[in-house]
Image (cartoon, rainbow, N blue to C red; front, side, top):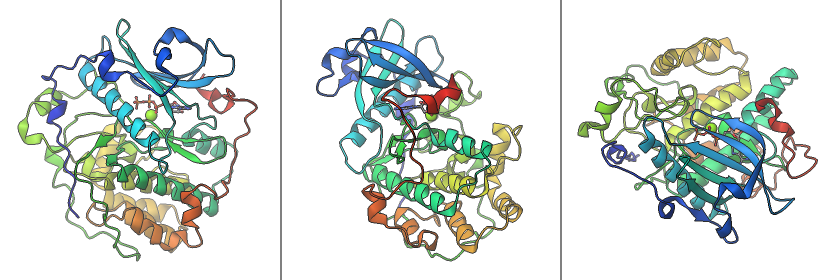
Length: 396
Ligand SMILES: Nc1ncnc2c1ncn2[C@@H]1O[C@H](COP(=O)(O)OP(=O)(O)OP(=O)(O)O)[C@@H](O)[C@H]1O
Ligand SMILES: [Mg+2]
């Protein structure tokens, strides 16, 4: 498979970016007059990240219109240039998704800047069922493990979501349960496109032809890129808190084909190692989610105290640790183990959507029903009204 090269020179800090309204503002028909934060009243904060937050808001002029409003703060922070770049990417990815009926992203109604406050705003459709991470947490608290039918459904929906996004020419690079939401019907919606990247050389064939037997990776090929592992962008840390080689990496023309991005726990080995990567990095993340749904354990995270640095080291040594994790979490069926190993695999052996769909793990799945969302979701949120945010209560 031909790799997708991701030039990261465009992220260099010496290219000044001063976003203007013309550059960032966007409105869906009917929202032209609403590009102003004063048009909205905040009802509750439902999520907060390292450089922003997501609130539920209502349109002051209408009693019924409820939205999710994502705020990304760029004033008075280090690396504001990167934050601006991410905001523009996020907007572009959402607009592209909204235009494609196969994509499952929240509808973006408008995006605007408050230059005085230094905030990017994204006014989105509010997805009421909460995120997959909170749902997994609730299931653990209730002591209800996911059944295989439930796991098949959620992973199958994610496969179709990733395939559609990749076919648009994007890689997401931050696939994790927090960024996957559940809509009012129980279907999955992919969010948080700030880490996504549009690529110009999308290979649609991928490694779909890989065999379906358990692919125990051969030893001896890992670690080649670790000397190049640099920190360009990392999703769950403030950009201000970056390792010392950050600036020099950005200015080093030799490092222009790698980009370090994502969330350590779900990051593909080639991303951690800073070598060239492709859409297949999203399928590694899918494999990490699959492992977590089946076993209830996070892959490569030994305990709640495991540091990010240690998680990255563990991913660098993934072969041995995957074997240990699999033997610790028996009984995994042969078919479950096989799919995990087809995804948590070296990039050149990893399967993509075409290969995943043929895997025996999904025996009995009606892919066209998954694709067109006629398959019955195993869980349907109970929402009393449009702005019911009870599935987000723990964030407040
Ligand atoms: N459209 C939406 N509807 C409902 N909830 C949302 C929506 N968008 C985001 N959320 C909630 O807010 C949380 C944070 O959103 P998001 O992942 O986009 O921001 P973030 O992780 O802070 O972003 P970034 O990685 O760009 O800093 C999500 O995990 C989800 O729970
Ligand atoms: Mg997020």
